[in-house]
Length: 486
Image (cartoon, rainbow, N blue to C red; front, side, top):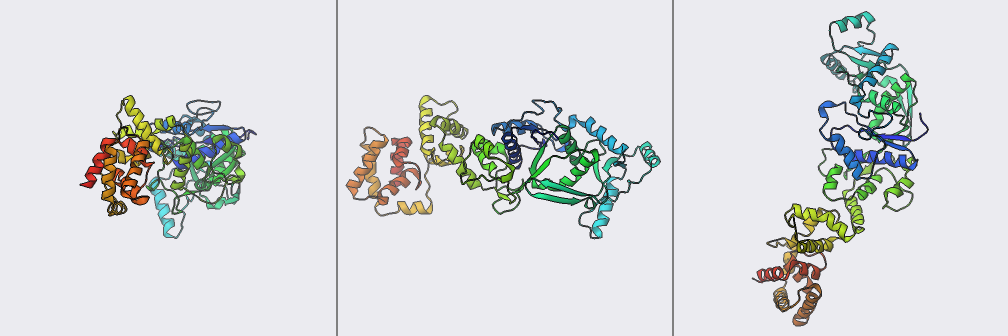
């Protein structure tokens, strides 16, 4: 095993970058950077039926968006190329033959139907986890040759040694022990010549000199099979670290079928979340900093990240915390940056023209600026600013109660008159008009401001009232007041 830290993220191109995969990639990247090591991107594409077009590119693009850049990959290349498993089949075949030659593996001619019958029989006898009983383990060379001559398809199975103990010195969980008696002889090469995951991953990690493997807790059960392959070849295994599960707000393991949570990085990107916030948020799912601080740049995370502060307890994916965190980063954007982020969402909804005039861009910039401080993500501008595009105002029960006050008609009639008399319709003058209404009617505080806000915007809360009224425009505001009075 090389002394240099070399870690990898090795997804299957069967889908886009999931938040679980993104966290795995991030933790490996942070670890590599902290120890001046190397982060490798590799593709495990042997599940041909489930591979999707663009899956690999999508993974790389979304990692790059998050600021995670490998030093070796199928695109970049590197000294251990190729980095796609389907381009490495000769390697797996050659090593499988070595295991066969040394009597550490054997050819299995059992059909799928025979194997299923065996599993069913074991289940019927109360066996919770059925295992292959080694039917083909003791075939003679003549029997193997005979079956091959008959054209029978075969897999290659690893011959699990008896009474062996495997101790994994897990960087997060401490020592974890497995017994060989709990694992049946398992397939390393399928009948179509394609290797299985637990076999291929060992060869890839060893031949690419991977020193540390950080992966999800669900992979812990794969470890004994992988340890068997390392021992069979006399190779030193990398250091393993199995990261905590990510759970939803009900503390149940996060499932890709859980529709209560947005689960793919591309979706967050499309909603106008910021990559810095996503990195910061994901870093805190299973890793804890030394102090109370929660906002970290990538450089700060790299400086602080060590395996010693990786946690064992499940990490809750708190969507409200993610929104809060993204808002912290949104606040740091310049006005120009937040406009560039949000304007496309207004255009997509047809609220601002695709090719706006300078005046329309300026108006949209003012609108976005009103919500800069409170926005959690870019797409939220559409919902937040809906009052500016509504043809009809609708009131909630609480809002209806506000405008039902006995003083409201008097306040709104006075306000309409004050606005009509304004020569310059800008926020400071609108503010003066509201003060004039107070003086004229004697109403003040909530009895003054709330009816004006609800009757003109349809909402009880929002940006500075006079700024909102200026942006709505004099004609729109007066028309809304008239409709309200009627």
